[in-house]
Length: 490
Image (cartoon, rainbow, N blue to C red):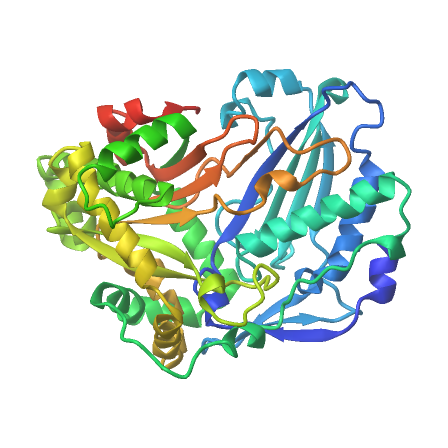
């Protein structure tokens, strides 16, 4: 801590529209480490703590204070005399690592209070928005630890989050092996948002209608949510989500099962269309989530007077739609010439929309039915280029308060969002005793969200996390095709 307080430099980092779109969200994860060797010096607390503060020197944006003006501008101010030191907690648990392992790291097996924040960026008891939170939980008999970490989406996407965790781990590992601070390899992460915006090309290409609708459908609610302070917005959204009974489940897709499914689906497409694992998983998620939502709406339509009132007040939650919107998160880094990827650590993701008829998604899941959906995913991903990205940014810059449009979109459409995180270096955080045994998100994120993560290297395949309302999830868990295609973990 002393080195951080002594060496941190004053600076102001202006955030950009890429940061504002996901700004209401946190990025919380659990990292589970087992002490398989029964080492008494397993992940020592002092070294973890000291290396954390050393890593903050290289990610100074995390110790700044967030400032907004209500008109769509935001910045992080790093003042050495008034640092926003992240929450860093340490505790001891009576839960043994073997019990967590036996439960496949189910959230039900977690000690209470491990996660100190939820999905929404909110202020703490003192009214301060901490931009990062850490909780180190040492398990019974020093059998392992859980590292809970969150960084606000105001600052980073997955590249920055896992970049920080891995850098923290690298510093700790090298310190434990006797390396001096000045022997550490240089850190090359970039935080200046101009590094991204300056790479936008001069030419523009029109956005497709669904994506344009996503970022321009405004109204009093959108503008008000964008105008109010981050503290107020976080409080309101957190309370709103708490009334939705959102639950999460985690599923494992083995390499062999997914390869077999992809080959079967590929057989219904021309030879020049080559599908990726992401195409198959996104198509399958679109179909199973659409079916779950439609079945719940049908149940609601046949219910009581309250449902009739609900259908009037919240039509997207009750009325049947003719189409389903899959929101696909796209990383712009590889699409912007000259942008140093993955060194740019700020947010660099945008959401593009894929629309399919509800009939095509809900007529029953088969390999043949998946084929055109997977093909449309491939076409969407291939079609996003630097000129699209430039037009996306220009459209939002015409009215910066539109940054809340994507967040409110789900209230008017039957939709889901898919974030593929499988290329992030999630299983590289070695603090000196090996990589994590398991990494997972929190129990409940926001409704109709799904992420595709890598499974542990020893397992292979993908881990798919889905967060939905309890009613929708119950329908999903009854879908035979979905449940036969994977192994539900918890």
